Length: 391
Ligand code: CMC
Image (cartoon, rainbow, N blue to C red; front, side, top):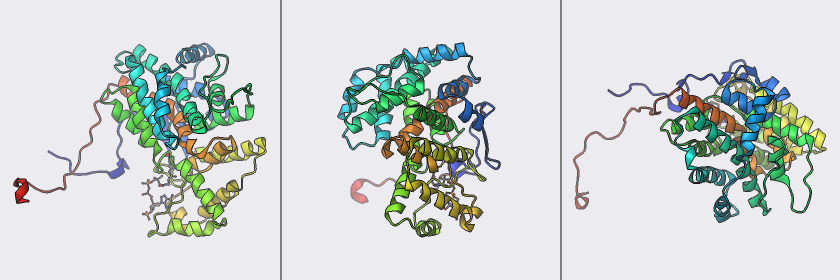
């Protein structure tokens, strides 16, 4: 028999049991493996959080050192990846390039596909944690016409990401603590968010026992959309548009409320948070700090704050419980750090990587069945076949 009820958008359908991320949308609570996001964002670094999400506990120094050294051994990609990267037009969106390169890694690392033991899984995990930042940095460098590079043995995980992204030819690279702390915090805030669209994608693709990299590539594609991770790029473009149009936030508020107008206030609303997004609170504060520390004044931050204030006291938004989400202020920080707007969603993917991995690993270890939703058929009933000259 078929099903009799459906739940479009899975608004009220649980797909799995999970011990990774706890989220209470009414109260704005987010915890990774039991730890409050506020504590992790303030006190942990991104690699510790990655370990926590994937393996369940905060690492000891020894565990963290081993994890980091295993990742470093995998921080080189096959030289042929450069040829693939080279074949993309310069105008290609970095998210499409990243999804393709992540999938292409499978070809050069076939042992990462059939992962039947925890050891196999571990090897696939450290491989992707090592290689993914290289792909991210190279995607940006290719767009900027910069030579491709690698990280340094002696740098931390996040330090190396910044080095690979920002190193200029013929210049010694200088670390900047403000950038390191800002990126650490942003990546931690994005690291997991239970069964969101891209994570559900990773789990469902992985449930067919497709390899980890193929599953992640699908997750990257899901994240790309403007209703999901693509919102961070869309927010900045929206704010810029408002600025260029004279900064009239009221006009755009009216457009967002007009049901005839497809315009939405990007960076507002969330499927689960109906009170506030705890990540947005942390990011708003970080935006002020980072811009202050870097000595950057961005008029777009004032437009963002103005919009948020108006929305928070507007009936339409209040009634629908629409609040700024994680993507509302993150782009302002990325831009202040010198990251181009088309790279914003790539930065989200970089942050979400440990979450996707943790969820994939949990799904495989729990031996979950293949994901296969049902439907209610609403098409034609039985029809007699007509040959082509009778139609
Ligand atoms: N601007 C104006 N109206 C909105 C907005 C918005 N940003 N978001 C929701 N609404 C309205 C919507 O029109 C609907 O109104 P009505 O009840 O009159 O038909 C009501 O609020 C409920 O919205 P929904 O679309 O049914 O809610 P959903 O849970 O399906 O969608 C969402 C959630 C995040 C996709 C949506 O709020 C949205 O499109 N926001 C803008 C894009 C965005 O910022 N996405 C990032 C999400 S957070 C991080 C991430 O996932 O990457």
